[in-house]
Image (tube, rainbow, N blue to C red; front, side):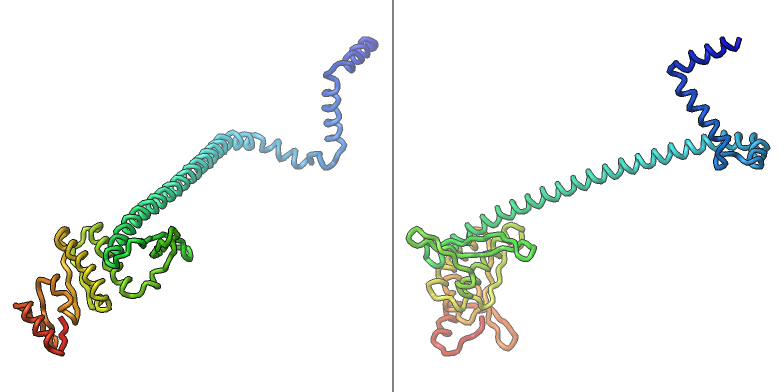
Length: 272
């Protein structure tokens, strides 16, 4: 019998399962010999006494903990999805913002090109200069978009750029008036331009050319011009109504030609 048992044990020792069996035996022996792993008699008695309560608590709390873990997982997943969606929306908003910024710049460039063409026509007409053109450019200045106005003069096939300031105040006034005209046309505002003594520095020739432009705007686009000036005789061929101001009181001039003739023969100049 002993020999048979030994033979079975020897055969088992040479099977693949033996190594696992030996590990289990070693662990069991370690629990018996290692004091740090051994359960004290008091703990063992407490466990045996409250075994049923422990099992019930385990069975009761485990589904709740699983549900809590599942809810937490769902919450985390939902938050992750929301974050992903917000990220996509933010990227979309940024793309839309970039699109609208690009569209605004393109639209602005279109309007600037159209305004540049209009100002060039007026400049060439008023100053009788076909070699120059007005150019409006959008530039970055201290982190903001700004518009620069320049006069491009072509001499012998070469373009020379002049800043607006170099043209003098009268040129600035003329172009400023035409910018008002352009904005009024595009924004649908009342077609009235008020000019308060800004034409007095113009030469008679330049003024006459400018009034030709004003007359075209008046006749073809129904613009009205309210001009305040001390030299009414310079506007003789343009004006259709005249009012004088004396001591804060104004009155209409009924006979414009007679008024101008009287004014020209007198050394006194009135504000009209």
